[in-house]
Length: 389
Image (cartoon, rainbow, N blue to C red):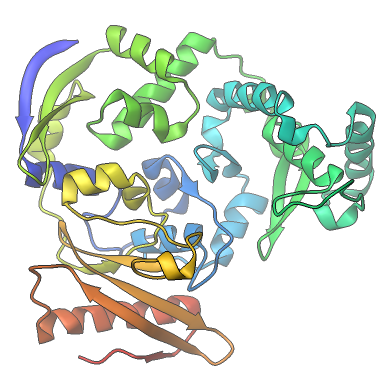
């Protein structure tokens, strides 16, 4: 490890992070969908569709040419990506599959020991599910019919659903395709390319590559952030890795002015030299965007206090059910609550909150209007209501 003690001021740190996350340049130019996923590392999947589901919105934020059917082709036809679990259900590039075999093992061991899964189908029942899929092709949960035994709880799921989940987590089954957001399961060996699936990477090497891939995308991070990026290694493994990896010790200036220790790749100075200020184009980001997801990092770097309130009772919400952060250059300048009514063809602005100290001039309001128009075209709602410059 290099005892460099390099100091990175707050503005430069923001520029580095936004550049690494594909938000420093305008979302224009040729669309390389697999390249976006590679750059981000993963894209979180989410079922909530207030405007667009999180994964579609995240991809569109990087290139405005993206449209929802493109992901289906990438997943189901090109087999360029697969779905599995990082900190949550996510899209990963297929080339990561050999590194991900340890995650299949980790999830199988963890879930197999969890009391939550004690009511899933037994080994014979799971083999029967796989036999049906082998014979009939990809199936969704709707193809099976088992009942919850005993008292139903809010999060109770029937035995077949637990079994499908367990086999998906362990890599026995894989997402073949989706219809809407409904997942269809196929046998892992029919989805995962054999040359990638059969690669046997030693565990220590996998940990090294996963940690370095995380730091490469984070640019600078503390060990906890590296561990949480993929959630495919544990904290002890990260600590051991930092002791032997070729890294730089740096200090990052927080939005408060405080200097905090962090780790960075050995080429951090070259990255700083190559970094330019981000575009001033205004973007409406998704609550599950990679730049937003780690809210402690978000607050530390940008001084932007954000929380997800979908699961907070309405009376206890500070902002609203599904509120979008507004990024402009290297600053978060506000937040907005927007809802698409696809049947009526309208994108409706419900609420808007400027950040303290930000002057929302006519010009800035016009930039937001332009972004709302772009978002409306993306989701197929020609009219924007509730916003005026």
